[in-house]
Length: 233
Length: 258
Ligand SMILES: Nc1ncnc2c1ncn2[C@@H]1O[C@H](COP(=O)(O)OP(=O)(O)OP(=O)(O)O)[C@@H](O)[C@H]1O
Ligand SMILES: [Mg+2]
Image (cartoon, rainbow over all chains, first blue to last red; front, side):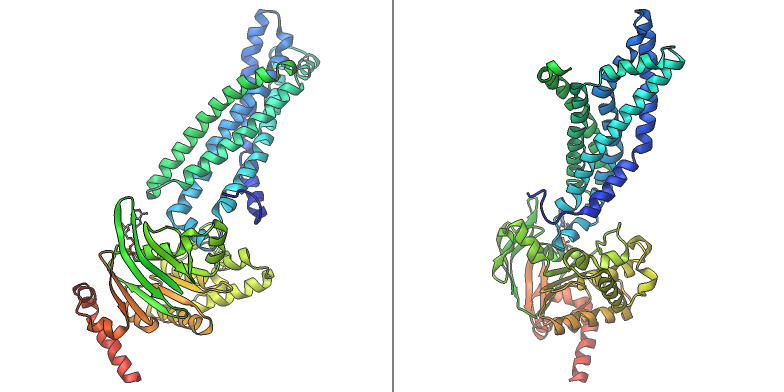
């Protein structure tokens, strides 16, 4: 099975980037704001007990960039995009559109899978970075207005943890998640069977399997990367 | 030339087609008939290489479609046109994009040229191009969708094999006539072999050089019209009985026109 090479479908890829990227924007912004603030609120209270409020920025940076941002963004995109991809491909299959495409001498893998996968590989990390930024900014609002930490204290603590190891994990995870979302959702779409009901079943399974895989893979990446990147964390 | 040789095929372990053999010569039109569920559409799917037979071979110009590499299959499919039974229009593309699909994907023609050909082809199948070209397939009636599907299959650059799965079912007589004329025109102008699955015996007679009747997964008849009408095979007789009137009419027409 040849994934890349001619013909490469540019317009499909750009269209998917738009649908995945712009389409998920509001979801990611809301997730970032509320998850970040909730997190910051809980931590600032706990840290105050130890007189360690000034560390809020560090904790926010580490937990959001390494874990919360990638996982939340990944799960949100999985719910929205994986469902969409599986349902679309499943519906195309059940109405013979995939066969029609094949009959026209088109490779459905290149036409349908590759553009979606590439769009995910670019958009999931981009959306994750945005989610991180918004969540850390949400932490800033809590820090200044509720925990009464100065802005400088918060931001310098954040900056202290913006080091290679953390940033690497923060980008590496969403790239892996984009493969998880892309492969699982297209696979379930192509293998759906049994009409509308089958498409519905495939869509549900696709979201469930993608979400769980993201959580499991996230754990293992954290574990493996921790031991590999010990010096840079 | 197309050749099916001792083909067996089934889904899971249920056998649908059993020991099917027939040939379609260059520039020959074949009508495939038979009761519902007898495996007519399956024959077309096999010929496209969408499925592969469990036993036997299917060859197009001597090449076995199931032994080809994916890339070779794609190349040979570019010379085949197929009208799916349910239309199978791309529902996220407009009517115009559907009809122009082949040219958009496989030709270097200018947009204006493609657009002109799409307009012309939509007109050929009896639809108003200006009205529907920017609509989505879902906004059309069933009969209109079927005609768009036929337009889409016909608008390719060099078809060698055309497959029509019940192209005229459910259409009004006027559109049926247009579509049959279009099929005949294509046959006259280019060297295409065509396979038409149909329940409309009158349509079959007006286009086909050869008739194949499938029954119970086997070929019950393969030959010319007169043989079909005279056939004593029980399966053929059972199949033809409901059509006796239209066949008589066809015969009358043939006598008067000769
Ligand atoms: N995807 C599939 N999985 C399992 N069985 C199938 C599948 N597609 C078709 N069949 C079975 O294969 C048999 C032949 O189907 P096919 O569509 O070729 O019939 P047909 O002769 O075209 O009938 P019709 O005139 O109603 O279109 C049917 O009994 C059908 O139940
Ligand atoms: Mg059929």
